[in-house]
Image: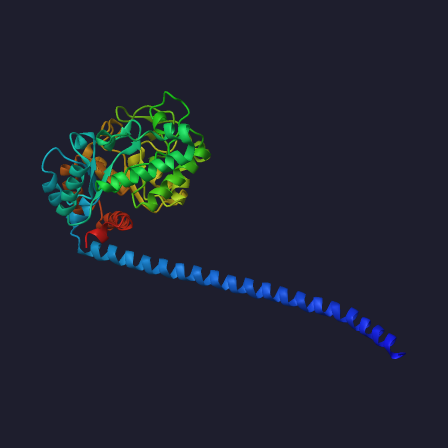
Length: 396
């Protein structure tokens, strides 16, 4: 009997002393399990990232191989032809694709007149079938006052400004998805949008074609539209670099813009940078003369090209605005303009004078004023864009 209290006491001491040990061991097990779980999770994440990296590297290797193989098989004439994204001519559309090896066709309002969705699909199919290299088929589809395909649709595409005012970014993204579907249904793989310009004056030429918001909101808009187009494999084009601003119409006159580079950096460059960072395929350069940067139109300015390539770090396709516009046509001849575009570092020439411009560039290669190596640089970028759009898959 006398032992019982001691036993009870000892048991109590043991229970009291064992309890902290048990808690401590449990704590160690829990912490150890969490550490092990976190370690396993990080290993899985690292393995997934490594798998993505290896897949991406393999994809890049395949892409570069396709591009280099095609480039190696091209004649000089075929390479020079790839520098031209032309308006659809009035006549000899198929013959010109084959004779001049054009990079693609841009459809304008007249090309849609009296047509149906089915007719347009058949037309673009004929163009693609006639070309040795898959074509960029484009049309200006900003919405609002600048949309070509809307003439054959029951409901025209609205401007980004109207969409934003009515339903914010969700309305714009919904419109972008619908637009991508419609364009692809007729064989158009590039819609020449979004407009990345800023304008504060409602009377400015470009104002109604912008989203009508500040630099940060416009940058967010551009980023999201570019990403949506990527998902749908429709080419994106940021325009009109280096930013149109509150200026007049370069379709009808030479425009001189007195803004400084610092002013452009603080606002106008922001939407372009956002689009570039989001993976924009191409940038369209205006003909406006930025007087404090260069004395020539931006579309033929090496200085503007350097800003885009080196400061904004753009690696994709740089194209000109239409060379037929007075902003350039009144400054320099069409043939010389084509040469200056390429010497400035741009890749794609938009316009309708390719029948004289292509022979002119070939002559400049023969005279040593333009090198084949310089042409190859641009053709690589153009072929890379076509590859990313999946055009080589459909041409196999």
